[in-house]
Length: 281
Image 1: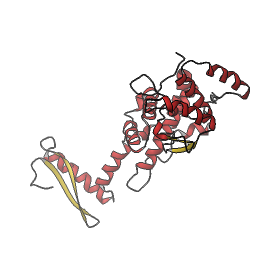
Image 2: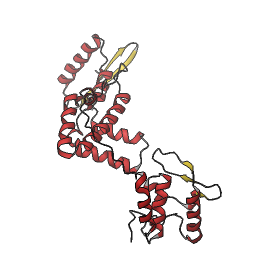
Image 3: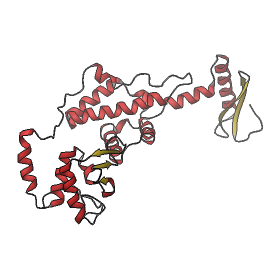
Image 4: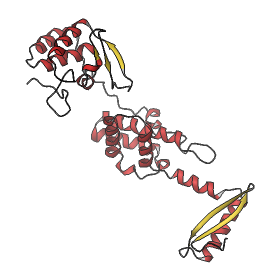
């Protein structure tokens, strides 16, 4: 033990032709007797082929908590703000008591019980969403965190239990599409809307198949009436896409542009500048 350090108890020893320096503790919290005892413990470990530094690092990695993993997960994923809010809400609502738990302590039984409990208390679709979110976070952890031997600290995702036991809830997908025999009635109703912005917006959504918020945020700078196309700058997959416009919409947008005084194709009165939650008013 070095006698030149008054604040730290240090221990040095060569391992594999490399000098390893281990901090035993701080003085006076660590007495000389405790330092000698700790040093002997480290010597015995080294004699058994154990590198105390690697052992300490591995223990720290294995102690990484769900909250720490989730924070790291969000930092490397290119997610939209809404998706981040959704993921965070799921983690806080379904797994609040697991946040400080080391991920290696999350068992398959615990995952299965929490999935069932969430389904009974919050709904089956929400339970499935929670389990899928947890699965993604733990898949990231499995790939990210390794032991000193290069092995994953999470060799198997505990959420796999839900698939193995076929415990996923069978939730019918919502279909919000119109059936062919409903289209005429829908068009008749929409064409009678007095607010032309809402009327045109709804028709645009139906004929292009875009999501409502994608259509609402569309700007004239992304519409080419000569080329009969438009660009979605922020689609769900995150990659801008140029898409064709049918003649009906080209005519409609031409009329709108002639009288427009906004950067948005479907302007709104709010601070955002574009149409939000349209209603017939």
